[in-house]
Image (tube, rainbow, N blue to C red; front, side, top):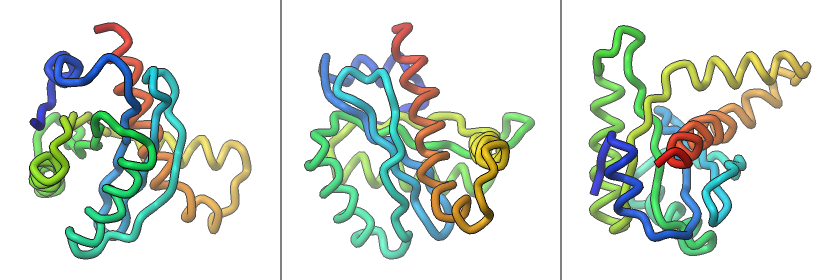
Length: 154
């Protein structure tokens, strides 16, 4: 099941179980995770994006290791609210993940997530090199925390 509706997503989840947040880029996938009570997101790592089957194997490993009950994936909507090619690519990737992993997937509006994380990293004087290393996982964390905050109200 894949949806852009947080209420529908929440209904498909068991009462307890962590979520995995994904920030899908063209070359990498940022990954974050939540605690089993779904209150706090934490960045995990950045995966190299290549063949779907290779990435799927790495995600399966993380999902099993962290006993994940659902996925929250960033959806790169344009600033005017329209969907472009990247949003369509994310929807397709999410549909494929949902089918292969048999987990509910929430597509979460990620507008300005990377920019917000970059500003935060700059404000704490993080070097360019270090920002490049952590930006994707931190963006996944930002996306997942936004979804967790919304799910608390449901």
